[in-house]
Amino acid sequence: MEISNRAQKLEPSVTLAASAKANALKAAGKDVLSLTVGEPDFTTPKNIQQAAIQAIESGKASYYTPSAGIKEIREAVVNYIKSYYHLSYEAKNVIVTDGAKFALYLLFQAVLNPNDEVIIPVPYWVSYGEQVKLAEGVPVFISCAQEKEFKVTVEQLEKARTDKTKLLILNSPSNPTGMIYSETELRKIGEWAVLHDILIVSDDIYGRLVYNGATFTPIATLSKAIQKQTIIINGVSKSYAMTGWRIGYAVGDETIISAMNDIASQSTSNPTAVSQYAAIEALSGEQETVEIMRQAFEARLNEIYPLFAALPGFKLEKPHGAFYLFPNIKETLTMCGYTDVTNWVDDLLAEAQVALVTGAGFGAPEHVRISYATDLDTLKEAVKRIKAFIEKKSIK
Image 1 (tube, rainbow, N blue to C red):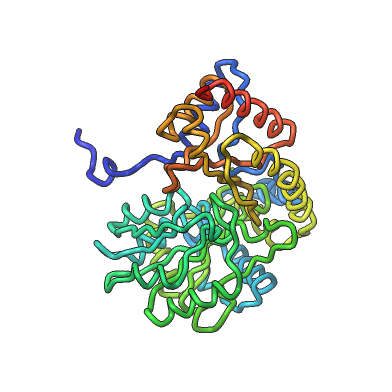
Image 2 (image 1 turned 90 degrees about the vertical axis):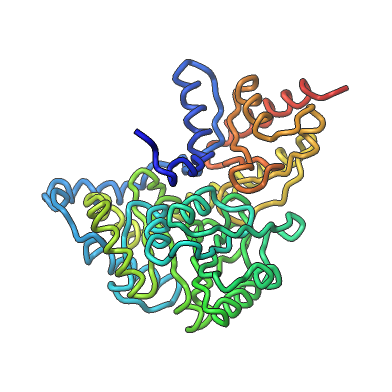
């Protein structure tokens, strides 16, 4: 049986591939330190677990739900956006999905026609371009310099714009860089998008995870016109340590949300019922645990950043959000006699048993992504092993 063209053209997720390789070695008894996936090392808070248990025991979690999610969770999203964004929406402006990744997938399927162009700043999260291609769109990548904090400018956007440009994807705080756009930067971008009728896809999944006094500004909050031009993508995975529960959501124009709902109804039917009840508690219940986790990530960042920055050849900016480091290791590669970052990462895993993610999948082949969503002991030991690996490989 011949595989479809779209499947043949699809690049697998480098983050999931790296995690799978690390897990396979762990299963074989190897002492692997995995700094690959963006998954908090906290368990889901107890109040959220109890809400799920109660939903199961009461029988509420036993049945199909509306494909966009039960009314209660859509209203919880509306209230959450009202509290944290100070924006007013209705339940009809919300679709709840099987993770924020699927919200993005549905959006691209709902709005893109063949050859529509989507502007994606580089570095980018690994699935953006592949999902655009699955919707028969064309990803248009714009390289953003590390010296400018990996941020795209209006001048770059205008240079990339054509009459086929339909969407712009913004991710702030960013995966993989951890950078955050300022209000001024976002306002300029938002006004440009409004002027040219380009839909803004605002991936806000790390919005609650910002550090050292940094501020997250949702672009949708900057004006009524920008709000109308924006689809908010978010979810409970990162802030509430609920990656396995698979609940994301999209908020925006009713017509677009309705089209996404139609596609969801013919694909997944509905988000998992028990996860919806858990997510209601996450969004509506106590928020102290979010702050506890945020503080833990901030403390880790402040402790491990100088350790990684001191590694031979590593050049990196200190991130302001999310939980990743994204160093340029071009000098390290040269030192160690490598020309390809993926080969270096593969050998680091094989010889030092430290798993990182190649930057090639993020559009940045001189970089690696390091997740610090794990404990300090693991992170510190990883630094020691990486340093020893570099010294061993260094060309004298």
